[in-house]
Image (cartoon, rainbow, N blue to C red; front, side, top):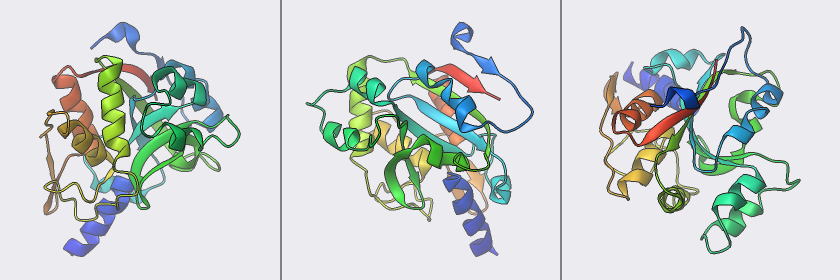
Length: 223
């Protein structure tokens, strides 16, 4: 039975302040890529995004509203506003802009830690699975955000953490990628939730603790 629960949890994890700064949009149906794209200009490279998906039965296994965590890289212009050619992964990121219209994110999914386009997330190319999205920005200077991104990108191609093992960073799930990247900067996040026999840092745990530590502010919520 635990194996079944573990499989559900893994699938789920794949699928894993200042009020004046928060913008809210509401609607009954899921968001299309076009609707989400109207808000990309409000985001910045290095922002943390949590999403709520529909369609996935596995969502019932993970606690909290938010089901997957992404690190926003953004448009080519947004990347270039923060990073330059001296950044270790600059060329690698820039090469991902095939048409120069892409919006990029960094996350950990079944394929491991990878850079992919935003519309590959939540099935936005076809029928949308995106119910809600929230975005948080570090209350830190650009040097901090660059260090955080460098740490996260150091994990490129690391495998997915099916064991949900928080004691090692050799395999990572979505919110664990953020946790381990911050740990390298001596920022420890420890809020966890028991799910079956596992203790995990869920996307909701991650954001709640970042807010509690006053490390981030909420800049956007779509619901």
